Image 1 (tube, helix red, strand yellow):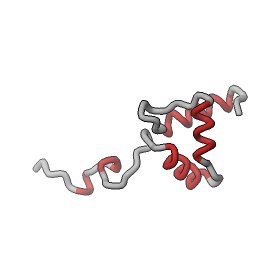
Image 2 (cartoon, rainbow, N blue to C red):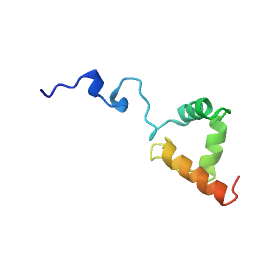
Image 3 (cartoon, rainbow, N blue to C red):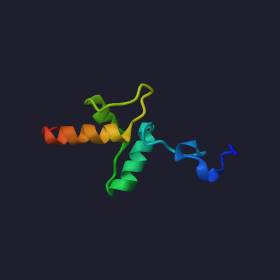
Amino acid sequence: MNEVTPNMMSDVDRPGAVSPTALPVADAARLLSAAGGQQVTVEMLEADVAAGAPTNADGTINLVYYAAWLAKEMSSGGD
């Protein structure tokens, strides 16, 4: 029995699912705003990218790497 059922699919395989390791900037801004309780704009994320925040080769954001970059910036006194 090798059939994949909907309950066996990972969230990434589901139609319309988002991957926290490859979010377009606009989606990352919406998700971070919803989860964080304060607004995060596309412009804010683009400014972080310009300041050195990591992105994937296709320009998407990996939230784990982004969070690590933010923590590093905050600990070194970066804005």
